[in-house]
Length: 158
Image (cartoon, rainbow, N blue to C red; front, top):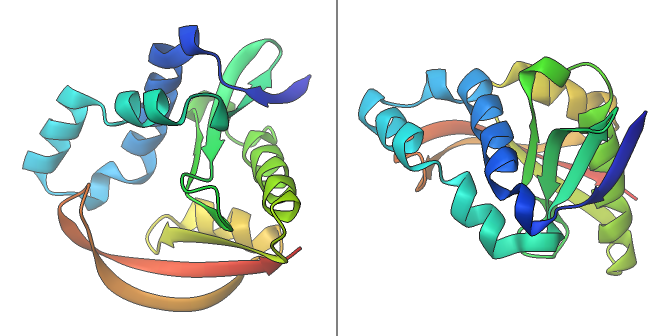
């Protein structure tokens, strides 16, 4: 059974590992080796999760955390969707997006936005299948990944 719920403080390490494992699969190949080593060593999901706390949503499948999602700035933009590779294709990402869209609508927005690395084709397909349409495509500097990445901005009417 798939359940969406808020993150709990005692889950921080397990959730950070979900984020890191999903990052390894989808983003790591796009990042320079020195940055990869820094991210692997410092796991930036730990401070991210600590800061956002219960604003992070968890997709739980059969009682196990399967993915995390958030609107980091509590606006109209979904900043993070990370699904553990072992749970891909089981609806966790779609359910997290739907729950975050509901939060965005509750904040009074009529549109949801999301950004994705152009090379992250699996995530891009998911967003497009959920009704997101491309607004822009450009190369931008990612300060966390310390590199230029081609990114795509998408939006969906709510």
